Structures are given as structure tokens and as C-alpha cells.
Length: 94
Image 1 (spheres, rainbow, N blue to C red):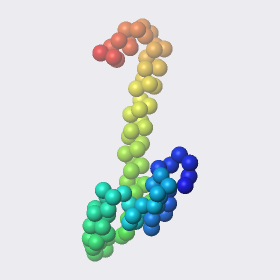
Image 2: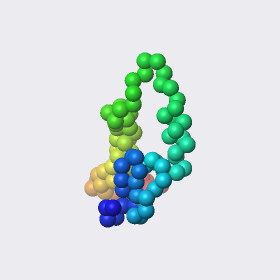
Image 3: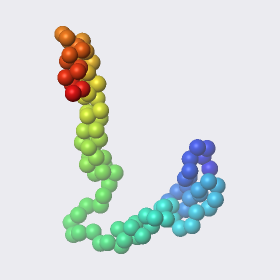
Image 4: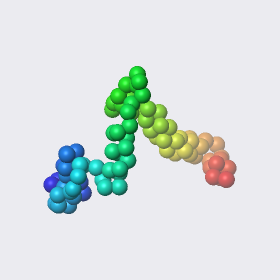
């Protein structure tokens, strides 16, 4: 078992804190949902879900979060270096 990890192993079976876990590598609470999803037939003509498709879907969402985290500090920096910085920052905080 790797040091500092709670779960280690492959999908066929893993260990939790050094003890063998029953079932597949899925957590117990998600096992029913995973079985239901695997048993559901895919729609005709629908391609299988790939890692590339997941990344293409989540990339704009992650980029939105990063931009929103960066925007306020950048605005604050430039406002603090402008004319009347105290008043400008007070209006920004209000």
C-alpha cells in the first residue's frame, strides 16, 4: 500500500488501510448506481464515453472557475496602483 493514500489497488479489488475490500474497486455506496449504469443500453449511434470527451466537456467549466478566481486579485492590484487607490478600493468592496 502506498504511504499517504486511503485507497490503493486496481478496479478488480483494492485495499483500504491495508485490509482487503469486498467487491470491485468501487465504493460501497456507488456500487448500485454503477451497476445500473453499466446495465443500461447505450442509445443507437451514440459513441462510447472517452476521457477525451470528458476533458473537452469539463475544460470550459474549469477555465471559468480559474478565471473567476484570478479576476478579482488582478482588478484589486490595478485599482490599488491607480489614482485615489483608497477610495477606489472602498467602492470596490462596497
